[in-house]
Each structure stands twice: as structure tokens, then as C-alpha cells.
Amino acid sequence: AVYRVVMPTIFERVVSREIPAEIVYEDDEFIAIKDINPAAPVHVLVIPKVASERLDTITDEAHMGRLFMTATKVARSLTPDYRLVVNVGPGGGQTVFHTHVHVLGGWGEDGPDG
Ligand code: 5GP
Image 1: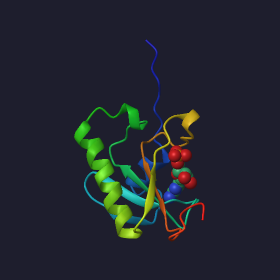
Image 2: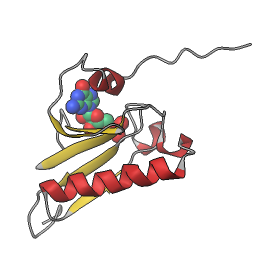
Image 3: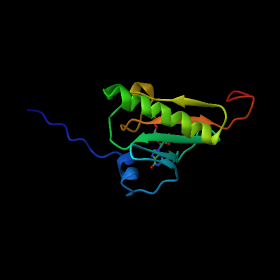
Image 4: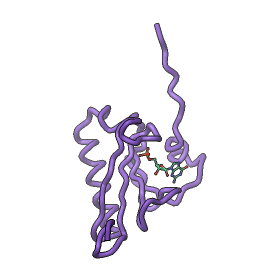
């Protein structure tokens, strides 16, 4: 048999408080932290505490629903308008293989390209 060793990602270490992060929201299922290298005036990551590698490996529809419900609530608490972005796989720009939703915003009325 071939075994693949799954290394803990940086986000598991954030969840377990091994690595410090600026937490903006937390409940039993999710944690939301400020991105260390923000790509927008508001850039937060909404991270399920139970790791899945990428969005399309989630099989629990209710969990995926709560992930996006939580992302919209966190986003609305920070900025009226925003983008939710999920990078899926290396070719989709994913670099941390622990599913997360990017909340990007804070550009003002003219939007990200204004
Ligand atoms: P991805 O490219 O996988 O969609 O997004 C990973 C994001 O995690 C990037 O925006 C990157 O800046 C952020 N990131 C990587 N390492 C850390 C970290 O240790 N702490 C925080 N807060 N964000 C991180």
C-alpha cells in the first residue's frame, strides 16, 4: 500500500494556537483571521477548524453551507461590499491545502478596480 503523509498545514497550527493570528471571528466550527499578506484593505480568511484539503473535497453540504454563511456574516461585519474568493488546487492559486474562503473588501464605493 502507498501511504501519503498529510503534514499539518499552517492553518491547523493557527486553529490549535501554535501560531499566533489576528482572530476576527471564532465559533465551534470556524475561525476567521486577518491574512498575513493582505491583498485588499480588508482581507480575512474563514477557515473550517476540521481540515479538508480543498473546497471540492468537502462532502458535507451543510458544512459547506455554514462555511459560506459564516463568510458572509464575517464579511458584513467588516465591510458593506466584498468579494469571496476560493482558490482550489495549485492551478487555481491555492497555496495552503486547508480549505479557506478569502474575504476581500474595503476598497470603497469605486470597488477593487476603482
Ligand atoms: P491560498 O493561496 O491558499 O488561497 O491562500 C493562502 C493565504 O494564506 C494567502 O493569502 C497567505 O497570505 C495567507 N497566509 C499564509 N500563511 C499565513 C499565516 O501564517 N498567517 C496568516 N494569517 N495568513 C497566512
